[in-house]
Amino acid sequence: MASLLNGERAVVALFVGRVLFSLPLSLLPHGLALSLLAISAVVLDVLADSSTTLLSQFNTRPGASSGILLGAVTLPTVMISKMIQLSRPFSLNHVAYQELESLTMQYWAISASSLSVLIFLCITIWCAPGNKPPPSLRSVWHAILSLSCIVLHTAVCCVTLGTSSLTSSEAALKLLWMLCHGLAVVKLIQHVFRTFPSCASIGEACLVASGLVLYFGDMLAYTIAKVSGCSIKSDMVQYGSKTNEINIIIQGLLLGLLLFPVVFKLVLRMWECSFSTARSEVRTNNETWRSVIFFSSLGFILIVIIPAWMQFVQDFHMHPFLWVLSFIFSEPLKRLSLCGYWVCVICVSVLRFYNISKNSKIERILLRKYYHLMAVLMFVPALIFQPEFLDLAFGAALAVFLALEIVRVWRIWPLGQFIHKFMSAFTDHRDSDFLIVSHFSLLLGCALPIWMSSGYNDRPLSPFSGILSLGIGDTMASVVGHKYGVLRWSKTGKKTVEGTAAGITSVLAACSVLLPLLASTGYIVTEHWISILVAGTVSGLLEAYTAQLDNAFIPLIFYSLLCL
Image (cartoon, rainbow, N blue to C red; front, side, top):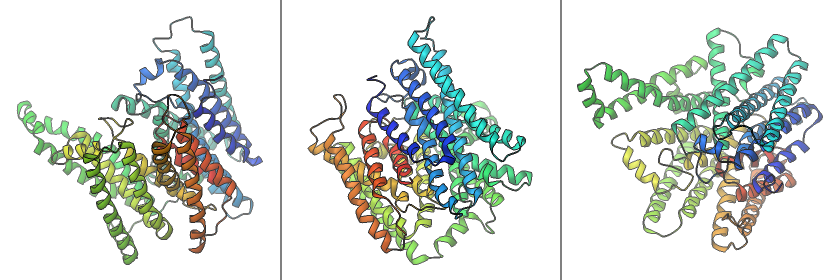
């Protein structure tokens, strides 16, 4: 029982319980499915952490727990929170039925992804070489309970879709779509652990893989709809996101960069085949030729291939990059001034922090928190006064980060070695030589709540979830805990009660300042202090207890609780 109710699992149970407590009657089947998913995940989480067999098979990040429970329930709970938020205006006829249906399909798709991962883990644990027969009675009961919850979850999903206003063919199509999501997530997780060993826990890989498949499934669905000439059914493939030009540009850039390493490998092989063996080895091993091939391929994809897809699925009436320029210059004074402000903050901060990291004895974990404060300085003014431009800027920044990481991993001349040396100055135990993820998690932690708040949003603080929880709460918790912390949450951990209290208090103080500021700029403030207090407390406790990459999970949990 003590291992079952450790700190991380208790906080996740509090998070899920708070969301389930807020469910309206119309969403009870979805809540039941989430409960079954959570029970199955916690059983596997306990089983995985009690033995090293599963973790060693996947070559997970050293020092991290499996994180199965947190990784499996986070995104489904976020979707249910969004459904609760959207059900309020739907009952007043302020939003269309199709928008709620698209969000419901999004929930079932992400739930099916988590369920597929749990089934895959069950099979992996059962077939592990270390599990020689006969298995222990405890393992048998764990497996039976987990599989029973999985079966019941599947039954609830099928019954819910079967009793909705769908024809049998439409219900079957949705079930097939969900199955494809699940299979894609499992294959992607296997690829991640095979390609980047010791870079993530199981929970982190589940969160990233499920999010990527859901996000790019939307892109695939629009492409299929365009190719087949069919109209897009919003409740099937739109996933509740607004299909505007900015979303299409971000999707295209990110997918193109994620698939680029595969293209680059193929181009290198074609280059080898086009010359004699000896000559091709000289050319491909030469850093200059390799760099020329790399940047030529990257430029062709970003300038020709990806914009062609963008124009195919969306009517831009011009090249997408020209559309970006016209969008910026539609309000030149505000947007160019904001760009100049960002460049100044980045240059001054990065140069200052890099020099400190080389010449100072300040611990790296504290040095990294300065970047969290830099995110507050950069993103808060933009989110209040230029939210659409900030959406585009987040996509551009993430694309730049991806491109630089690809250059670093492949050591592309002349920037690869320099970027590796520079980035290594800010890494910690959660990064590795294969993959540096901290800057991605910080950027996405701030961006995702903003992107998910597009469309109807009656909680003005929800877009600030990442900035508040990471930029302010996490930073204050680390600084105060490091300097003044005495009482530790656990005997083996470094997190302190004083640091957690400082993080929660700072978030509440920031909200008390931000709410009047939003009201003065025209926002209709409907936030409840109870939701803010619960969100700040639960996210603060999770930061104290979790061994996962907190930048990835805390903003999503904070956002979910603010939506209630």
